[in-house]
Length: 271
Image (cartoon, rainbow, N blue to C red; front, side, top):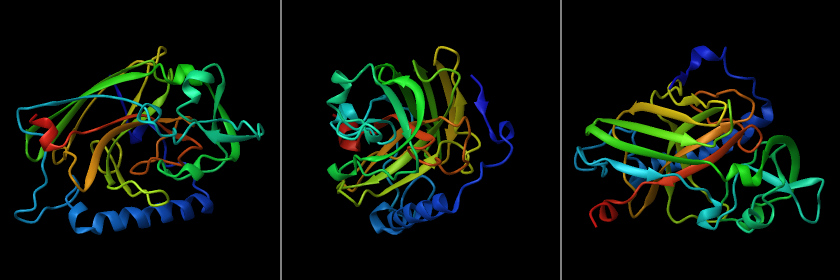
């Protein structure tokens, strides 16, 4: 396994003013999430005495099996098919498409499109971007597992392995908090790169068969899901073969969340 770090890419690719404006809008949501009293205890925050969140227990690893939005009855956020009624435009992949449109080619979007998984009006149509060079069926052949552990309350470790991802491709891994409930038009999430806060340790490259291994530490350890939020691990494919530091990049256009999995709550962990 080898990491793709900041030394492998000379600088962050230039972002247009449009990207910056759209990223600023999502940053407002993230800031609101970070300032909310019940959501300010994430892995990058300093916790006040008595407010320590529930972490993966020391000596009790948590195993995750990655899944897809469609398997949770939600649209895929970052990959697209031609719209049924407007074939020159693209729409987000729907759960029903997985069985009926497996042989069709996937596309990116022409512009960055923010995630809004609970909104049925946010599936398109959108301007078509570049083809991704893979069919819908092949996209869903991907699989992966991860083991999260705590060496102590302050240090976590993730060990993951994947198969059938995009071949010879760059991916990044992310730890995210998602506010409950998930409401249409009000999807609140905070995404943090695994490892160093600047994203220099979150990237990995697949081999010519789409297989990869990834291992990194994360400070402090991983927070479990709770009544107020979900926590999750996710990987994003970068179709421009670039990484964007502490930002996942232009979503839908060149950065495409491929798979994810929620962490259990403390109650679920002890059942």
